Length: 501
Ligand SMILES: *[C@@H]1O[C@H](CO)[C@@H](O)[C@H](O)[C@H]1NC(C)=O
Ligand SMILES: *[C@@H]1O[C@H](CO)[C@@H](O)[C@H](O)[C@H]1NC(C)=O
Ligand SMILES: *[C@@H]1O[C@H](CO)[C@@H](O)[C@H](O)[C@H]1NC(C)=O
Ligand SMILES: *[C@@H]1O[C@H](CO)[C@@H](O)[C@H](O)[C@H]1NC(C)=O
Image (cartoon, rainbow, N blue to C red; front, top):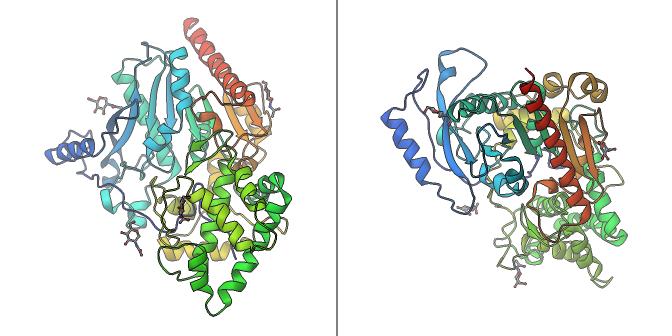
């Protein structure tokens, strides 16, 4: 039983359709053709979203920044969101480097930037990652094959950000504005790498929950699932043991004659189950995501959940009589994840929806983003190893590509990061909460006076990026204040430097 291998946010089984956009003619400096204009109008119409305080724009972006083949200068429309309400001319520009999903989802969950914008008189920009949301280079056919998906990689994404930021500064006549990049999770990796690769464009990066060391063998492969397990074990030893024992019960039951029928009943499935794997994935996903988003306040990132949801789940498990089956206990716990809204009539285990448009990650995980993971004997999941050959073969079957498992560390580094960045980097904050299993693959130690690790024991997946609330605990208020102060010091230094030029 291998762990679901391909997710940063994701162990998605099935995928919903993505919105229709675009593709267009190969022009050099693209003047919108009638066809493009009508597509633009269509894009604009498809997305009113009045709730977010951002205006939506579509930027004509170059398909391939790194070759000069005839098709390279094809353009597609890259979506970005902007808020200029607090901005003063030449004030800083805060850019969110979008990750693997709809940009609006990340904008809605990164209230921190909006919270600090007034103090900095900052312009806020959220740029969507190519091949996600509406930023589809080949419209509906973007995910069709390796021929189109080949343009989906992190280097192209970073170059997109650079080109867009330069154009934006020009249009706002604010070439002198300092740019600070922000990102969470994969977006945090992009923010940190952007600062390293494009120091002439961004003066600093706040990389929240960015597992840039989850590659090769830099971080022990079992650390992710060990960290998930620790969250549950710390909440209650019984809870951890029930979950750990439930997998065998599941296997045993499914091997029986009426096993799947009985499981369908127990798991209140909308349709009769075809296989036990979907049950396993469904449970797995609930436990992993809940550990990632073990936030100190009620929140809705993946799903609406109460404050400290791991503790809440374990309370459910611990509340059962000892005679109850482990399966009934873990079902009740997972139900909290899937049905906290209390609106689900039944569970569709074999056909989960992709509400945030994350499905392109499968390709990224099969090409550059190879993050080997295993489950140790101590984890609450069934022990498993990582078989690279199997993994690569699956990728070949699914996408017709072979992974390049050492490319990320070749392109961006990672090994001996402290010695390297101490000499060659500056102005990066790596923030992490130890509740989040991704923290183990991130930077948890201060590297230099300006490459700072902010670590909180009770923090979870980019919790610092969430909007401030009255219920926020002191450690979170303090962490955000420290981030703000550090960013302020970068900005002040920048203005001092250009004054004394
Ligand atoms: C800047 O203005 C040009 C010309 O109007 C436009 O094509 C481009 O999309 C603008 N850049 C951005 C980032 O919006
Ligand atoms: C979801 O919660 C509601 C309210 O507690 C309950 O009536 C319903 O049966 C639950 N759905 C499932 C599928 O368990
Ligand atoms: C999965 O769900 C989608 C929409 O929710 C539906 O259109 C599709 O038919 C479902 N597929 C299966 C196999 O049930
Ligand atoms: C890194 O340095 C900052 C002060 O600059 C400190 O607040 C923080 O706790 C240090 N981080 C770690 C992980 O020691």
